[in-house]
Image (cartoon, rainbow, N blue to C red):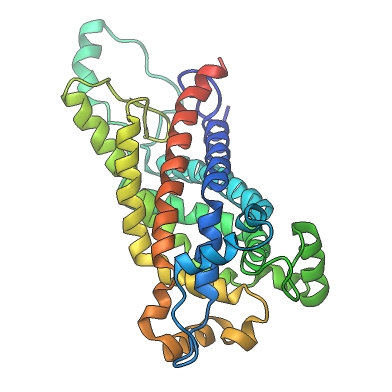
Length: 341
């Protein structure tokens, strides 16, 4: 079969996909209200002398004071749930495939037929000459994650456009989408198919976030498993992708995922602000035309601070989401092969 099997059973691609699907679903259910607050802050425009800075507390208070606060806090849940679950499932599937392709390119050429059996003494003496299996480097993980990210963005951009428009406005607001399907019909009717791919260009730039994150996370995880083995921990097991299995504790997952997420977030947060404005209602009239127009107008009106609007709720949101995502992902990835036996 084309997919390498895990120790317990189930193909690598299947396990990665199910683990990603589970992780994305759980993360959204827990942190969706913070996502609404972050998006409302990102699209808020401040005009000197006319508007006080918008705070996360002010947004939360306005949501809680609506007639249906729970519904307000979970407005846009459907596209967010579908989008995140689809994104994580497809990301880990594409990433696994890309990693296997990179390993295949790095692997030494294999003989067309196995060599004849040799005496035990000679075989043991020649074993040291067998080349070591190739391993993925930080650069390899960066490339694999970037390729996976491109595939995910093209696949899910229509969902994110709908989600952004739903969470950025109250249900009663003029022009607001009452639901995901009705919003899709309205978007298609008013803007055509191009409307579903608003912000795709800036989103493709955003694949660097996942690329940086996993270029930090995967090598750090490998280093941890090696360190743990040297201090009496379980011996690491590698799958066909060169990744360590079964030896990363939940505590280590929290630390490693936090470090990798903060590193990636520090570099790529401004693009999220630009993307949110590009994908919103009447984007050209409100925020500028295209990526350069939005960036120029944002810089002119708010300076560098505008590119980090919503950063604090974004950080608060992203860490719990990251913890949930990686804990669920690593545990499902570890236990699922055993369940499939």
